[in-house]
Image (cartoon, rainbow, N blue to C red):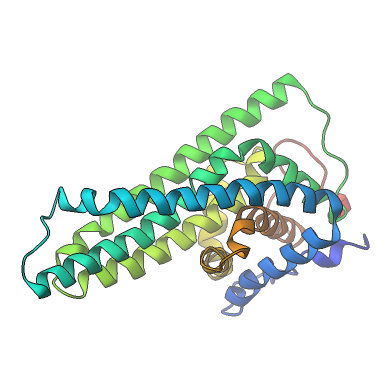
Length: 273
């Protein structure tokens, strides 16, 4: 066994309630690995600088444009209770939109660094060096990555749109939308970052969905940890590299537990075992 293989989570063959906490714990494993590996730390520092600028930019956009966007569909009421309800909807909607934006804008800006982060994570955990570059492999990976990204964004937006009518319920509707929208976003986050290494190894998106259905608690724990990390000042600048490393550790754990078939790209993961 590789001296670094202890970083991979030991995933039980059958789902269990404690999987949620194991998913949460992946963020701690990811932080530990980033601090121990020089290349991961350097890549993470670059990601943190770009992510911090993107998160501040999202706050500025929502602060300046969210009120006007809400007024375009619901005029600001004159009564105090109407203004209170309007402000509540504005705040709760902005919270979810900020989280969604944080999971769309930084990954797009940092797309060239995501695969190197995932590859270095696998190497640090005992995997072999990355496969040599080939144009055919690059094109296949690019097509697979775009298809996965579009599919994930589709499911995220459809889920939030389905929940949107909850705003019509007086009082509790906006709260329900925020809670259920946050839970949906957490699961989407887990799929986003589990799919990162799986896309690189050319697994079909159907395989990502299968794993998320089979290990819901584990994936929800990972997504919840990333969601909470987004709200911790300073540390939230590192959410993207931490999430990518944590998703890659989850992928390695699933492979080591025999819950995932061999990767379609033919890359050997025997060194992880």
